[in-house]
Image 1: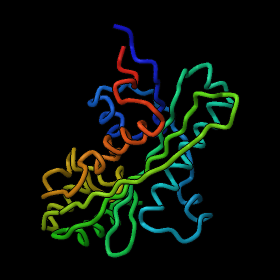
Image 2: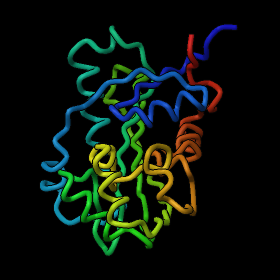
Image 3: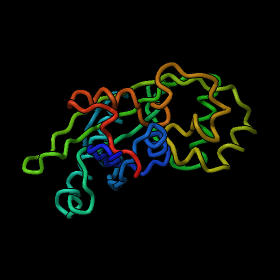
Length: 218
């Protein structure tokens, strides 16, 4: 049986996002943007908690789309669609990306424990199929409430010492070493991992593309 003909580029270096797509039967190509997130946010001015990750998702997707057009990626990477994503945790009116260091990660977990926050993931999908025109992009966000266990200082120190919290938005995972410290979620589980599969399916549908048309592994 031949592969479906809709090929997806994932504009993210997140292993969790790639694994999420693969587990759902999709085999994307991966290109990383190198966007300076702090600069993008600084130039944008005041943003809501939902707007921030959506803005970053768009910046990443459009950066890779520009590279795809101008540096020959269109020949090296045959693709029809490009997806950029970004996630942040909202707590106490603040939005948190990856902790900048271990001390920050420990402080955040002391604020998070025994409480709940909202994980926002922005998705920006770019249609590359008509190379004669400027690629068309569209965005959407998904939000999931996450409940954290009331963990001890020793547990926080041990978890931060693994290094995992420094690599992920909000300083935690639900599908990795942080799983034992998440007591529940309200909303899409995959969104907490960093990519909402139901939302992506809806965005594809808006383009007239069914989920089963996405390229699977050879």
